[in-house]
Length: 98
Image (tube, rainbow, N blue to C red; front, top):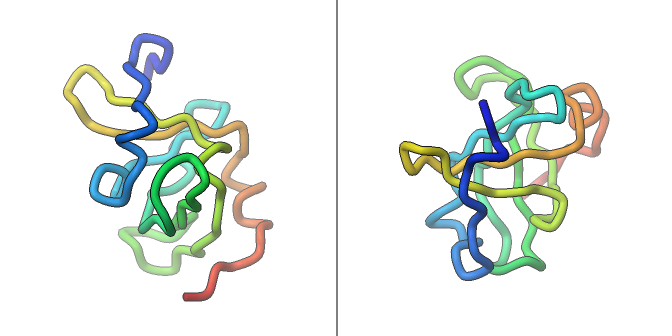
């Protein structure tokens, strides 16, 4: 995926209705998880990312500040995020409990 060619989301777009379900890619360009839901709105929010598992089963939810993710739209209009973390680093984070 060529993230450099994708359009970054504006601060007004950083809300649950836009971000939920977005795939999250690590620095190595491999998918590391998916945004399950968002706490708050705007740049001070927290994204809960499901890491690992298969088809949502066995995934570990971890909390990440939106400022640690770079959200963008691809050429098809689909929202995704890029992070500097790897899947293994995200798996090492504490599990988020609702």
